Image (cartoon, rainbow over all chains, first blue to last red; front, side, top):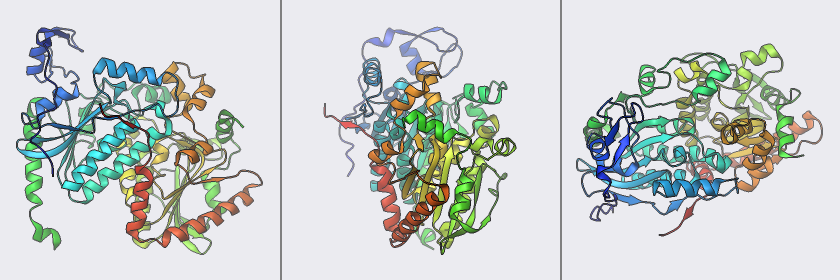
Length: 282
Length: 262
């Protein structure tokens, strides 16, 4: 059974609360503490800043319920690809994380679920064998105990340095999503900036419900590639969350302040629907 | 041949296209069109026909043989409606118990604004998910280029064959060089780093069979046909649960990672 009694693994904030951070959009210097209290939305211009995974988990999980899983899994330089080891080392040092996704068990408004949160700071959360393994295991675990998966996606696409193994993670994760789905379980994908390439072409687009953050970049092919291939300039909002909503590929755009309540409501409604066994079997 | 020479070989104009393989392998074929949602993508040639005595569903990415055809087929880069046509026919194959044969030869999925508007990523994602549990045997042959997600969307299979010179890659080596080194002329170097040859795929467990490219095309296809018949027969002897379980495990084990307790 799942163990929710263990203390949260979310790291304690250090003494950096009075540190200032420059807004990625308007460049305003904002106190880290203020930014954090404001869901990492710039109080000056309202733009969404990227959130480190543990701080996102803190925003979503009921206090003290998060328990990290698969924290020991990390990438290896299996193809001996030039500069990959160095790149991994640099990402680990600069983020303090071992891979580009954090997985765990948590409760959201009392409802237990598995979550995975991708980390764009870590080699653009590209899809490595380790990322694929952690996400696959997360779905397999959720399938085995019949609980929902909440996945926050972000990715620049494939981890090129792992070659074909990176590509195969798309199929591997999709298989685990399918099994979770086929056993009647809920998967809510929350697409955050940026969700592109192989992640868009696999588990980001496989949610029963697909939410997106305002103005997040969401797409398959890169804007530059499309502009080069077709020789035409693309509109400003191309591949934004709003563009994806307009074209029918996301269910809703949900601001950060509302995410927890929307996710909890969805989990509650779909779970209660699942109690109607007589109809299901009919 | 070096990996780079192989890449140039499969990209050369004289290379048999996906449709040529279908013509050589399948008899009495009837091509079927459209995704029933938006349109018909000519980059994917699909339908039903006989492999020997066995009726099968075939789905081939086709680059075309002359400029006019290539333009209509987006040089073998399928659009969302192409992947949706493929999935429609795979689900139909499942319904009627037909084995599915996919021929893959693409630089990758189509990169264009209209593809994005119609959900290029979503169409590939749906294929990956649905193919994983398709209750009929699927064999995919990487005949030329197996480019990225656009190739994988037709290669979630029980067996993957690769032609001797075919390549399978997470990204075009040109794209890799351009992104990693900001220099698209370093393709040959990227090819070596990415490990994209049939031999590599055998070693990695990504492919089960390499088809030698010596001899003429008809003989080559004769060999492929014999292998297909044997493998389809074997796969058809499994229960649907065994089949989909084996397919799941085939992909489940792919990918390297370390598990280091700290």
